[in-house]
Image (cartoon, rainbow, N blue to C red; front, side, top):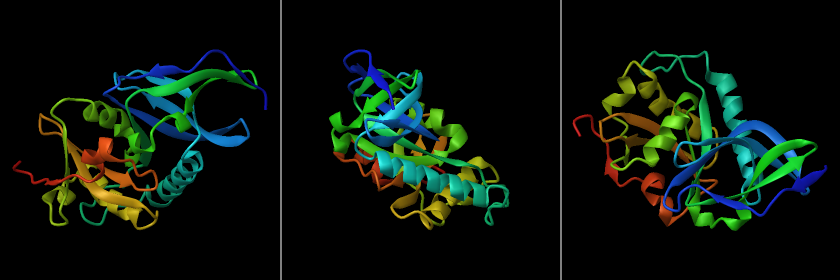
Length: 224
């Protein structure tokens, strides 16, 4: 494969912000490896299309995304047995705390933005999954002051909510039964009370900088 680097890597995103790589399912061959392609959502909301994740966790991201796609194909169209609502498509997102080293390159004549993951501290990268349609909201929420994270107990009334939120909570648990390293049942809580349920992907484990989202210490209850 022909690839040409245009310039030295740029550091994108805020040093204190959370950026998200959202794989599309496509891959590209770059420097001898097959790498996932997707969108890079910066902490300020800017979306960079045709981003390529090169380096650590590249294969893991491809495998985990493919597993989620397979489960979406299997379950979407069926019904959540708790709230009787249709299942929704889930999506994996890989959050990077701090700036992301990105190099613009041309691969077989097409411009791409290569994330040089080996230059990122592994503790600053963690995997999550949520409703596909809410990934931008998830990114905004984790970058918004006042957002907290919590666990949802198994007897939470949220599971009974007859909407996407209720379905999503149940579905994060459902997918953890099929993908090793996945852990469902967490939620972001915005300052206005809105919640965004999500799961943690322990195959891209992250560290202390992301611990508030990886293992929330609080328990969510609907009166909080």
